[in-house]
Image (cartoon, rainbow, N blue to C red; front, side, top):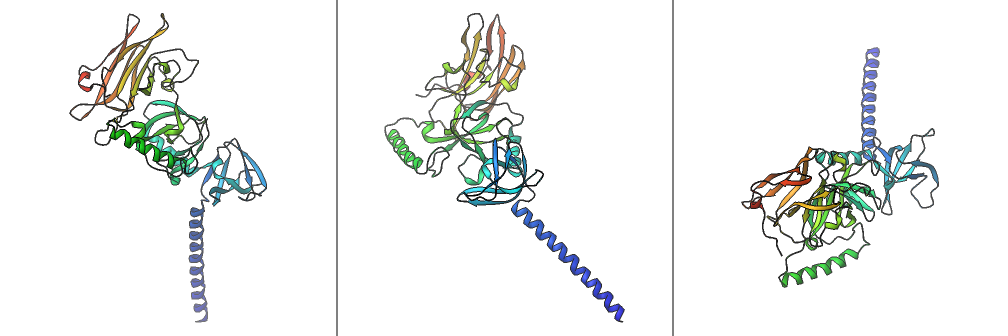
Length: 380
């Protein structure tokens, strides 16, 4: 009887021990997920310091360089600055704190990669660079929750798409001190109201903020994609065609027609020879249909005469169109074509294909037979 009782007690203790271990493992696993023990980070700053703490008087423990991988242990926001507790992969497995702006976590990187999947089969539509340091974001809105990381002033990128977002008062905009934009927004609202009373058409830049969806080269950022606030962005129109841009009609999309390389389609290389371009343009007049603005309202095809060393207009819209991205170019050699989406007067969106070819050293364009139906007199 005594032996039987001992056996039962042994089994009970074993069960309790196993259950306790399982519960402990579960608790530790849960804690790991909360503080990010399973996450890693890549250093994006040229150099950065792992410090003893996030306090101002903390000492430096280890200098890390761009591309170094760190294990993320914990995170802390101190005086509105985010810090990560990390473990380095050096011989001492140095542990300490690093400012979040110097690294990008694996979780953040995956979110950016998922965004890039949306346009992996699409050619770039334009190119740009930052005129001021700006936050790269997951969505076209000012929210601290969607910030990927901060890009440096002068960073370059390809523009894949854009959104027109109605202007609103934002207390904390990337390129201004707090309170500056509120006052400016109030003054701008008064100007818009005065123009409306005078009967002037609404202006695009007065009604909306533009956000750009961009693709970044690995040399600029380990994160391949994100959204940038348009006030920070300067379009990098190629130097050989920028002089044909008019004050009341800006270039918004361009692709070269005499290159086989998609990477050079929106090239801004100043050393490149002049070439042939299809350019989509936009006036500053707001013209929404069902609350949606067109991406472009004009088409221009410029060709370069190698003998005269001058540009000529191969084709252009006679009035205004209502079109949406993307612009796609296909074909080889001198035989190319580009396709765009145009709105028919009946309201449907149609894909239209323009054929480009060379005839006696002159570039010609054969537009769709019914293209005149899609063109309307320009709005003044």
